Structures are given as C-alpha cells and as structure tokens.
Amino acid sequence: MRLALHFDFPGLQDSLLKLLPELEIILLPSAPDSVLPADLSADILLTSSHLFKSNLEQVLAQCEGLKWVHVFGTGIDNFPLQLIKDRVLTCGRGASSVPIAEWTIAMMLSFEKRLPESWIESPPQDWFAAPKLGTLANKTLGIIGFGTIGQEIAKRALAFDMRVLAKVRSFRASPMKGVELIQDLKEVLQQADHLVLALPATPESQHLINAQTLAQTKQGVHIVNVARASILDQEALKSFLDSGHVAQASLDVITPEPLTAGHWAYTHPQVFLSPHISWNSPEMMGSLMNSFIVNLTAFANNEPLTGVVDVKAGY
Image (tube, rainbow, N blue to C red; front, side, top):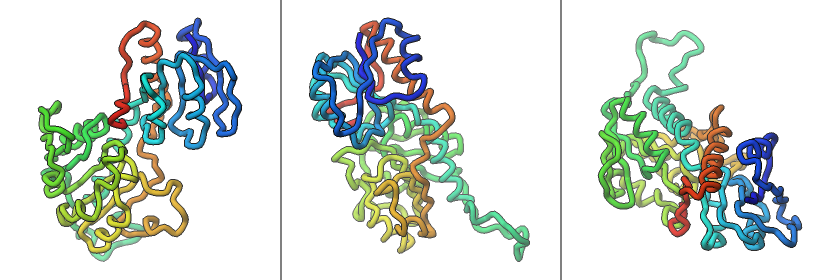
C-alpha cells in the first residue's frame, strides 16, 4: 500500500509506519511550480486544507492508481472537487466541533453578560447597579446547519435551558431530544435571539444571510459565524449593525483573511472579532491525526471510511 504525503510535520511518517510498517510513503513537493515524479502513483493521498496555493490539481491529475484522498483538516471548500472523479474523499469532520461549540457558547454568554464592558477598573458610581444583564435561559437559539458542530452547540445550549431550533435542508426527526428541526429558514430567523451559522460553504450557501434574510431576523438578534465568511454578506451585516437591528455580531471568520488594516470590523462597537481561532484546542492536532489513522486502518482492512465527503453536495 502506497501513501503520497502532500505535506509533512515532525513525527508524522514515524507514526504512520509504526501503525502500518508495510506502508510505503513518498513525500511530494507542494509548491505550485514543483516538478512531480514522472511515474507518480499511490493508493492514498494525504493533503492539507491549508495548502491554499499548491500543486494539488496537478497531483490529482497525474497520480496513477489513486483510490482515496484525505484532507488533513475539517473544511474542503478550497478543494478542487471536480478532480476527485471516482475516488473517495474524506476529511477530519468533527475534529474541531467541541472547541467551536465552546467558543460559541462563550460568545453568547459574553453578549448576555455584557463582557468585557461590565468589568471595572475603578470604583463605579453605584456598586450594585448592574447594567441590564441577560441570561441564556429561556432564550431561543437558532442554528443554521446541524452537522457535528451544530449538534455540539445544541447540546451545550440545552444545558443552559435554551430553546433550540435547527435549520436543516430537509425535515427529519430530531436526533437530539429538545432540539426542533425546521426546514423553513424564515421560521428560524424570526424566532432566534442568538443565530449561529454552522453550515458548510457551498455555492448554495453563498450569502445565505443577506439584506433580505437579515430583515427577517428578530430585532436585537446576536449573530455568531463559526462557519465560513462567504455565508454572511458583510456589508449587509454592517448596515443592520449600524441601525441597531442586529445587536451584536461575533465573527470568527471574515473576508478577507487575514483582514486588512483599517477594516470597519476591527473597531465597530457591536462586533466581537477573532482571527479564525474557534477551532483551536490542545488536542486539535491529535484529533485531526486520529481521524486519518482510523481511516487508514479501515482502508487497509477494506472497511468503510468515515468523514466521507459528498462531492456533489460539496461537503
């Protein structure tokens, strides 16, 4: 069994060979102008979601005998899906769900408890006169997209006694007690106090949240985007923030990344902006690695793979 590595980091090859000593590993260059071996062949390709500018398309076109491609990451929105053909594509889906869910809850609590502005650095005029602090209890959470991230967010929101609505592509029975699955986007938008975007970036989801859909949201809504920036029309959002209709936007993703100096999102008083870090945790590299190792063992034993990407759907 032959594995083509499209990237490398210390200890990766040793770990793989310890698992499967018979595995043959070839290390490929990833720079766009790299020269690939003329007789390139492999059963498996391990590439990375962070290789935004690389020779991936050339590798996919030239590699003979390729049966399975695994993306070391959780997103495939930059992947040339048209070149997969009849090969299986998998990714580390779900590896970052827990830290992203925790970050989302942190943003929702920050909004309700007015953090950080409720901290004090000197004696206030009135010690016990708190600002109007809210609670998550009895608030409605609307989640757009109910994959692994959405489900982890819902699980934590239910523990705070929130009502949880989840927008799904087609109605089905809810896999989680206490969560209402809803097919109609407008129905979710009109009821959500906190609206979380947790769906994949596809052509169909491009600017799903725009001026028209923002107008359908509840006055004073808090919007959290932990998905992809393309889902949210940023200029439309700014207009709704300026008017006060959207009370706060917590954005872990934005266009472009890195965001250029002087962009309005840096200084807007109703924006919590972080540099695409909600996925991070001490266990992240291990989780991503484990998703590939589980599949590598399954592939060697001719068993079904997990985290399979629906190439037609785009996620």
